[in-house]
Image (cartoon, rainbow, N blue to C red; front, top):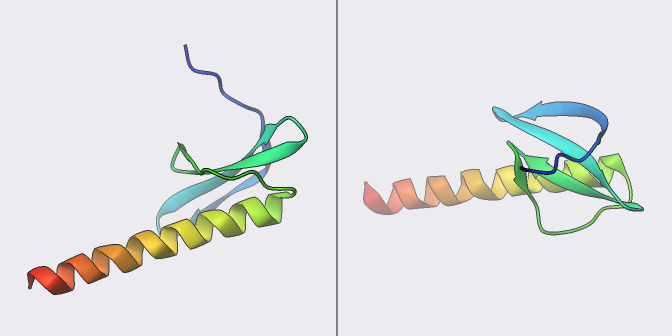
Length: 70
């Protein structure tokens, strides 16, 4: 059985992905489409910003891979 932490703030849609901040003790965790990011954050804005950076890096890598293949 998976532990589901309480969501803090509103979820955000970014580049087709869902970004969420969830409560973890005194800190927050960031999630992108239910994938937990590795760091802890002190507020919702920083957690969501980390999710945006994660998505941007993911898109950049996909673009780079597509460029090498074609």
